[in-house]
Length: 279
Image 1 (cartoon, rainbow, N blue to C red):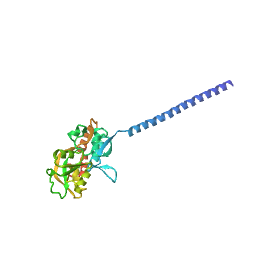
Image 2: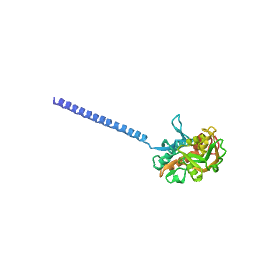
Image 3: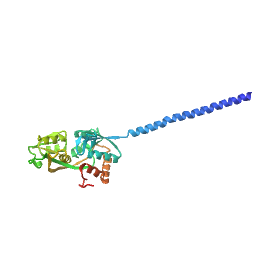
Image 4: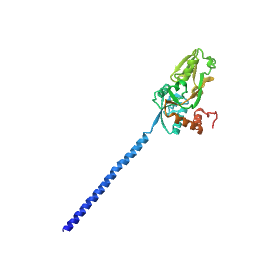
């Protein structure tokens, strides 16, 4: 009897031991599961928090940048270029449109990481912001009404009302070289063109690519360019001073030029490749 009681007790003790062991193993596995899930959440969090660099651009500088009213998206040569540069450099960008003056101010205050808006590289601007290598050769030109025979070049601007966009190199050029002309600045260049078409100003001076694009498309034969190219200029991508993005963007630009991507984008918006040919 005592032997049977002893064996029964031993069985009960061993059963309790194995049940406790199984319980500990199960608890341990249950404790590990949330940790694994947490690791996946951290990984996902790291992926979603990847740096996105802000890009400031102009609201209306065709064919470099403008708002497509049908899609609500920004488009143009600069927009395609900065997206291609970002892909090549392995970064993400978020584009925000504003007036041109806001782009420069955004670089000076480091509110934005990158600025691309057909911005001319000048010594004055380079004192407060950094520039990439030049990505577009440009200059200024004049537009007048199609039937205007009085203004054939900038030599004929004395006493004339000449419109341009405020805060641009064309405004500076007119101020410094044509003080005898009446300068009429506008916040947007389209306003200047409309004033010219209406006859309230005599000429418009602005960046040649934009002037020629407007004359050949939106003006519908009402305007013409005169006097050829003035003051050769180069556009650059802008950054706050000391930005670490200058070097990788320059490297990406060099690559896009070498592999033909730059030429493809150029042809898309200007109808020919930089050397004047087409594919």
